[in-house]
Image 1 (spheres, rainbow, N blue to C red):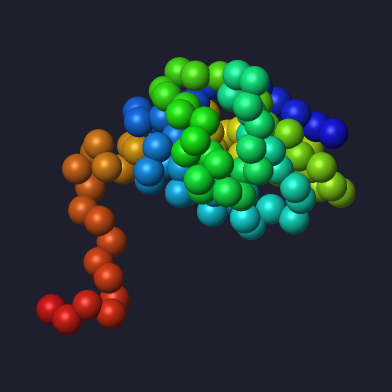
Image 2 (tube, one colour):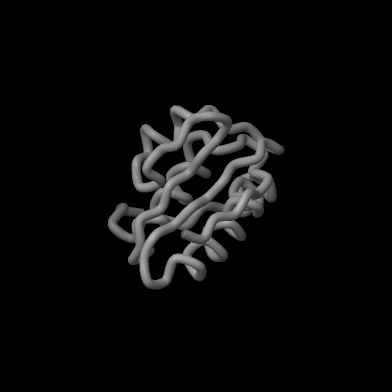
Length: 103
């Protein structure tokens, strides 16, 4: 079972938006993924599980995956966790408009 320990790069850790983006990326993987922080391990597809870990910027977490493409999944998800998922919010870039919203 491939696993990798990484340092979380998002300014707000794995809270709210970064956790949502991470869980969405995990859901696209064709393997079972877990995330560990300290002595706790959760199903990485669970938003509540990921949030319950209380991971802050700079905390170390361990990803593990099981399945045929586990190594590729761990690599992709590790890169995501190491990046600053809050970066576009901090840059002042306008958010993408909702196409269903009237102007």
